[in-house]
Image (cartoon, rainbow, N blue to C red):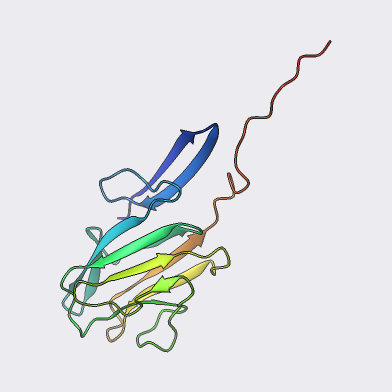
Length: 153
């Protein structure tokens, strides 16, 4: 079961909203990179942040680091536009090091125009996959400053 964590933070009279895959640490803060460890379980599944093939929910404008933990070269970790193996449908906008293996890090700075649905997949094994839902922080997209109230005369 995937656990999601939501936190509201107050800073300089503005609220920032963060949503991240629960990793035992605090949730994502605006402007902070979120790191998740990625391990291949043979050719049967991925373990991401301690969970097997979890559904991921990422926020536009946030940075996510997928840190490979001795991932075999036979299991390139891809972010794709559809649920498929291979590298023909990679989503590369905002992605650095798509197809990461070994101890490399795939970094995903989710662009504002990212599609609502993506997938992570092994380049070679169809069982190693999961959905990625991309969301926009609609509650605070334009900031959340209190509106000053003026006393009536």
